[in-house]
Length: 267
Image (tube, rainbow, N blue to C red; front, top):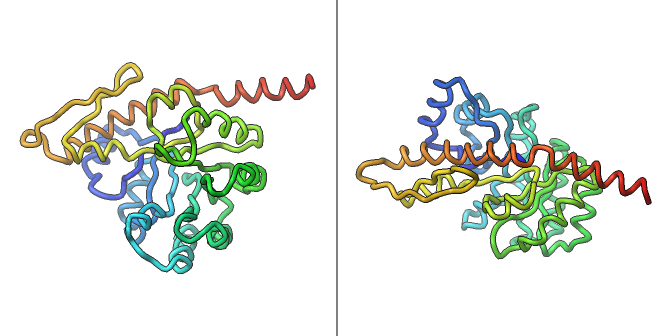
């Protein structure tokens, strides 16, 4: 399991300074095209300080009220991909705004992105139907399929195993968007997840201490610790979490596929 820390686009200087002084790298980072476009200097520093990167389309920003011309924005996204693609970038999420423009239009926008790279990550939503998830796993050119991990959305917690196993059976990797609920992470060995919680909690003056597989909330007085100090602390605690679950589930995929292929042969 690789947990990608997101929300890296702004006010990260103190974090990057610390990593650089320690001669270390963030293992996995996720950036939003919506926020990183036109900020070549910021993106360059993120790349220098991160081993592997995923790029989100910025679709969630639109759902928060930011309006754009969908096709124009998608073509700009595709051009940015052509300009910035590298081996370090594992994939680019599609424009999964089915709830705003409908799935047929999303498919049209996906075609535009696929002209730029095969590394486009389709994101399944419940409205597409389970047959579409299976089709995505079988036909997607890239190796990653996305699903949502937000509460009360497409998938119940006890259903994630089914999605993960089917993706593995089709030689795909599964990314669960926004999933850092410890209970679920302890039960489901996703290939990839991501989270911006490390930054969000700092807004409320809270830091998370990670130890022995669990988080503990620590209330920090704002008058003593500034926002950027809280961000810095949370970043490195969530980095601990990322490393913990990567160790925990290191061989989960290979063990499952070994057993699955063994059963297929016996049949």
